[in-house]
Image 1: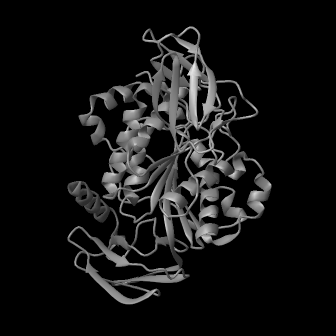
Image 2: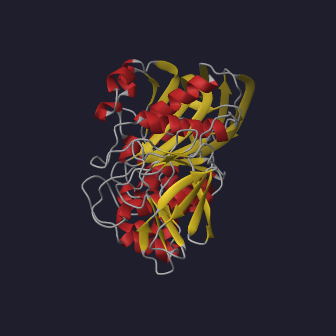
Image 3: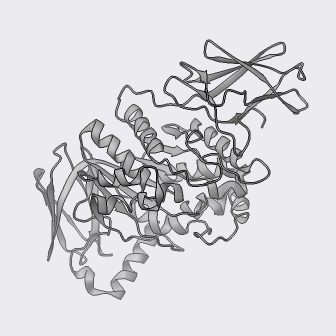
Length: 458
């Protein structure tokens, strides 16, 4: 990887004399948010050997470094809890001043169209959300769409304050997440959005993963060209993620999976590999929260629910959390118009897990089953107040014996445990719940959050 960076630097040097002056990557600019109370990496380019001095208005400390022989420089500076606005000054043979900076919480959001979806594209109560979006303590950065066959060292985009004119084109989920965090924490919130509609997870992963993993390679070959976005592995990781992987961030939000219904049987390994690779690149076990895809009519088969179950299984990774959308979807619209609910649920996960707030933020999660004769007992985590939804009270559970033939099961809830029974199954072995592409969960906990579909059949 170091060889790649050297190659890119020499390539830039041969093309333009701009690196005779101090310059910064596109992700640094006026109006940005830097992660507060952290060692934050600042980097850029200058003439080889040029001395660089960095100062800020939040501290009296002066930082110095030198551009190396490849015209690159990088240094960590300390931020504190002083919100700002601030100025960051980088001085070499020339001077770069970044103005109106804030110190706060910086999150990266990524995925496909449901993460990218803006108020202007159509969401519930869009006019009111846009009208009330002015907030100088919320800042957005949208990464421009680009592809690359090799890892890049820069990208394009602009930092803006939240206002009706900027918010309406930004990720609606990203905005609602930021708004909730900002209100509850009373600190500035910055959101970097690197999303592209219609893209499978493979394009967001480093190419090296496919070179050494036959399963990932096989899954990638199943992808089909479409009119919305690229499908070649690593194209967006190289162009839209790698260039910002030195940024100090608090965590990551992800909403994707619809474009992987074509290789749903492999999605658990695909998604697990993606999370691990991003954490490896950031060299940090970052919180990684993701939305489960909503029920939708994907046609025959179980592709949609298989992706949902794969997402559920990925919760075994540390510091992950899953936002449920099965109660806010529309089986005839792959883009649910309710973006407020998942945005708030993302924020509640972060508030509970990252910021230590006492919030019930987790949906019921299948844990294990026990059997007593013909009765199967289904145990959930986060099962306090487990109940059936009034609007759709029919059991969505099915059970099967060793023959794996599933039959509808009668359901009772006793002490937050689901009791199941089916006349046709004398010796139950397997259980599945809400196992249809279009099924909307009807089991909720005290937080009003729905349980995920699942199956115990491998």
